Image (cartoon, rainbow, N blue to C red; front, side, top):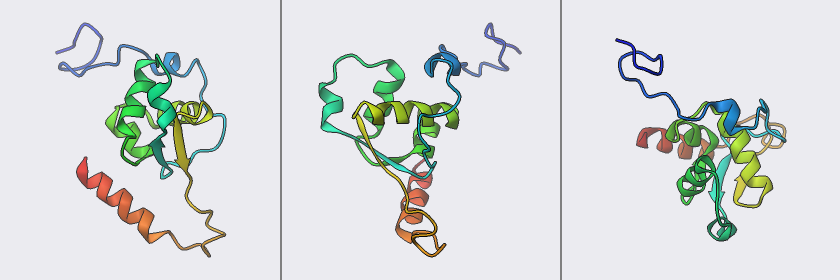
Length: 124
């Protein structure tokens, strides 16, 4: 059965389309790894009115979350999450902790980071 929004069987469609959330942008202003860790800054709680999507991300990131987790928990497409997180970082409302470049670690993945991502995925 189709819903009035054109989806199947009551699947909820977002009220705001992804291109509207990002202002039509399809790429973040700077490169943001999906495993980058995001935390809200104290400034985020003094910033006044935020768009609902931004407020949700700030609230989620009171505890450290990866960009992939933000995407899954909001829920929103990964590309949209990257753009919104980058916007929040540019405004100083979240801090981004990018993973070390592969060349810095000799090509080996950071075990601590992998454990954190795995733990976060298990919580989903």
